[in-house]
Image (cartoon, rainbow, N blue to C red; front, side, top):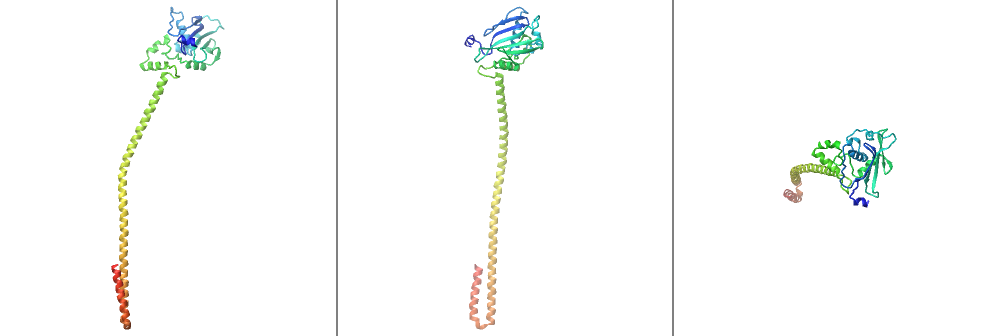
Length: 295
């Protein structure tokens, strides 16, 4: 791994490509460099076949390349029955191993594929997981552009170009590409805007309640004053009733005294021998009547 890093390879770099009975090749093995690699040759010599092999070995399908969806079209003409047809790539991988070897064997009988990783049979899902972990995406035209798809890329608008560019960039210390990061930030901004909207609605509701409470405060104050006046009025009514009762009591005592005085006089007239005693009683009753009136 130290040697691989010294040469400038990064995780996901292709360090070997091998094909057998694939398109124009009987068998071929290529060792790309760490940086720019250019394949030069006349038409029909297999330049595009190498890019097709890389795409198919990295989990791409024939539609990605722009060819027929039938995998048997990649089998070299004249390949004997029973001969193996495969594409194979070695990719730099972080960890204990220097590289990972992925082979895709094309089955000309059932038009399918068999996959192996480092010589061990694996499912396509396992291969996709390994490819994704190395940030390889052959379906993104900003990462891999077959010549048959150049026209598709030229029809991209600015938004689509930006999206595919962001999807092709993965930080060395991250698991998400920049598009996923941008989507996360966009989601956070949407949540923020929604929270701000909810806050604005609640603030308006609070302000409306504050206005209602202010209007009710004056009404409450008016009711409190009214209740205080009613309480005072009740107290005055009680005092008035008490005064009236006192007046009635005075009048009752006066008439009672007067009646007693009248009875005493009548008694004095009928019984003269008790006139002295009656005179004393009359004076006492007269005093009692005066006190009753005054009090």
